Image 1 (cartoon, one colour):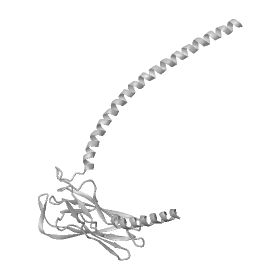
Image 2 (image 1 turned 90 degrees about the horizontal axis):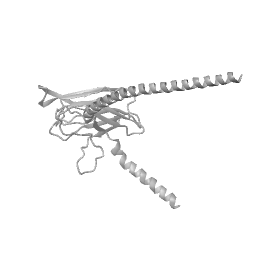
Image 3 (image 1 turned 180 degrees about the horizontal axis):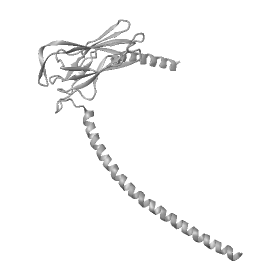
Image 4 (image 1 turned 180 degrees about the vertical axis):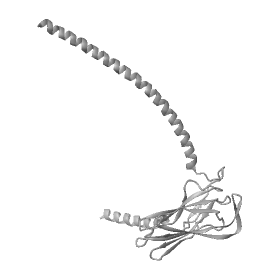
Length: 250
C-alpha cells in the first residue's frame, strides 16, 4: 500500500515537473554557429519546435531589432518553405564597406509549402547577418509562430535579468566580445587553423615513420630470407646424409 502511494506521488511530481518545464523548453530560440562577435558577421539558426499535438507549424515570422538594424540579412533556403524578406527605410543611414545604406531588413517570413513542422518535430531556419552592433550585449528577435489550426503564438516577451522567464519569451542572441579582425571569426574557425597545423605536423611524423618502417621492413625481409636459406641448406645436408645411409644399408 505504501509502495503504491509512493509510486503515485512520484508520478504526479514527475508530471508536474514536465508541465512546468515544457514551455521553457519549447519556445522559439536563436543560436549562432560558433560565435556572434560584436562588429562581425554570424550565421544564426532560429530553432522552432512544434508545441501542439493536433496541429503543425506552417509559418514563422522573425522581426529584426529596430534599435540595432542589420545592414546584411541573407536567409538560407529551406526545403519545403517559401521565404519572404521585408525591408524598411532607416531613419539614419547605415554605413557598410564604405557605402551608405538607407534601408534594412526588418522581418523575414517562412511559409510552409506543404505540411510544415509536424507534432514531435522541430525545424531550424538559418540566416546570415552582419555587421553585428558594437554597442550592445544582446539582440532581441520577436517571433510569431502560426499553426495549421490558425492559432498564432507570439514569442515577444523580453526576458529580464533577475526575473523568471516569461511565458512567451522572445529569442535573444547574446553577443561576444569583438574580434581583432571584426569579421566575427568563430572559435571553430580558429580551431580549424590549429587543427590544420597539427595535421601538417602529424603528416610529417607519419611520413618519417613510414620511411623508417620501409627501412625496417627491408632489413626484416633480408633477415627472413637468410634464415630460410639456412634452413633449406640444413635440410639439404640432412637429406644427403640420410640418402647415404640408405645406400650403405642396401
